[in-house]
Length: 107
Image (tube, rainbow, N blue to C red; front, side, top):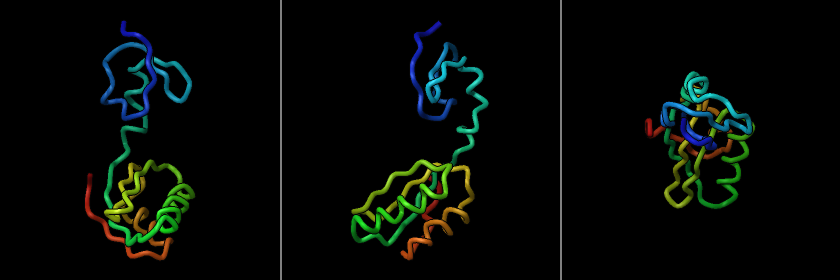
């Protein structure tokens, strides 16, 4: 059996056996393999952000939506989102910033 460790990514990338800490709860890895986290899809969007205020607006709408993990690349005007939400939902949500948004594709 492997030593316990904490995990934060999709369970498919974890070792095959041993306990793991998932959100502070130690559970067998095989139980986490069926986790809904594996349903997360990574999508990349172009968002016409010009300043930190723009990236803060993106952060605000995505946090309000919930069920997402994201990275904002302000210099390249890109947002990479891990989510189980549809692309249409993500486009609609990002559009609430008032910025021009386009879907670049899966990441």
